[in-house]
Length: 300
Image (cartoon, rainbow, N blue to C red):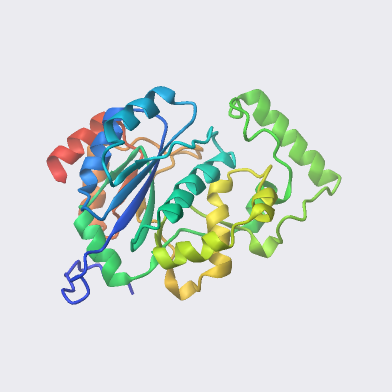
């Protein structure tokens, strides 16, 4: 059972807990600034920022502001990120690879987006993680509904217009043809296919384990898949991390309305309700700049 009391275990917290926050973003410098400020980084906490390669203006401004701050690292080797493409995963791997290269000592890695906000203070997050001492990853086995994402070829996921009606219809037709002709990839067994939220919080030891399992063969097997960010880490964690060391929850409040493929933008009242009624939620997405600025000013 999760310890949601937030009582500080003084013995275990004598050594300060260190968190690395990985932020993937593509717009809005002011919002990224406010998000970073809300994290209230200690000297040994870090933020690693990956800016979509298409967003040069944002990258230049973020780099100019933070390049001399020792614990805010702006990734220079950026990925051109496309919705539902494997590029989403590659952006995360750029962050993790640089963490490993820099040999930073840390306890937990939290992957969040540039449109996240903290629902509770980062200090409460640290106490919560210390008391529970598990990784938090939302995943489940649903191969029946999502086999097409992994075992069929999805050719347009790195096309910048992949959300257009034309490419959506074309992709659906090609998937149907593959099913009819029984063209099925041998990249993963059905039992391996798991799905969950991209956003996660991992113990450093767990991140070390799955990072060691990533090789060219695995990366090639994920090419031409759909929404790999909802499968890649989830499948590795299922395969290599004992289930009793994982809580199937991503610590996020996210709302998808009416079957939409992207979450809705939350308002202050949405955030207030969840902050009051659910003490094991620490992040929310999406929020716009105005909501984030007002929330951070009034409630953090």
